[in-house]
Length: 357
Image (cartoon, rainbow, N blue to C red; front, side):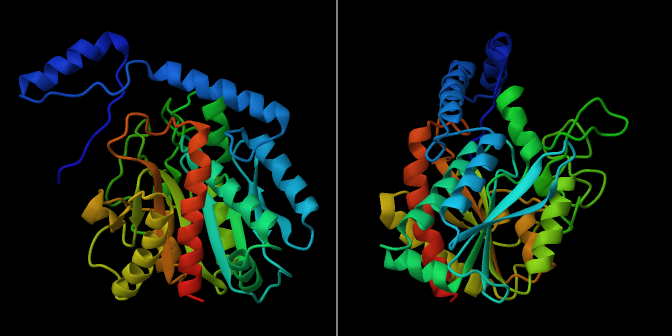
């Protein structure tokens, strides 16, 4: 499979790595000479936004998001309410906001979570933009009103708060949780390899220092335990599960862990293609649709595979947001990308919700 691979290299290793590629007749492209400079610029803007309290369309830390969710629910008491689903290893709150007119325990549910991989800031920015858009436009937008009248939308903007906050205070490109691993000096588990869906079988590493370490066992992490318990509590009503990741511009369908495809794969693909058409019409951005083994790589223990195979949620997908796999900036995008990303993902979500209604 021909795919681009991005490699971050310390400056003092750059010539050595280029030499290795040249020795096998490969010519790598240098797409960013100073990644830290790009990180420093986005970090400074994020800090200013957090102090100003204006987080829609900005990248801010977890506490600023919790405060905004509380304020937003208070501003729209008939349309939104808060539900905390648990605390993490480091004691941070996993907070959901339920968006829907006259919410009840019997309405069908759409579940959307983001930032289970800590460094994927655009996922949280996009989710918050959509939450705000729905609430601000309920009275004037017929599509929004229909979506909120029929469904309760459960949003978890930060699924991995410990790792997410660490990207603001420690390592901007941190991916995992922050719990120590027994017998290792390396912290953290990949929380999107930690679900009980073919756990530990493919696309993982047994090395606790690796980015794809799946943990000591399924649901070894508090953040995935809390999500499992809340989704299980609601699963009879959840009609769509959507995990929001970045980046590469993909719409991933089950199964992530391999073949054969689900028995209802043609239905899953039809709905995904309809949503993807709506997404593309918004700003002309193209997402590739398919299973991870077909268009990306196999990976076990993923949240959306568990949502479908164990929780019984028929329509379960994963977004990989902007930019494309050919981009030069990857996880470190400018905040100006949030609004167009939110617009196209809302178009996709509302189209899928309408199709399965």
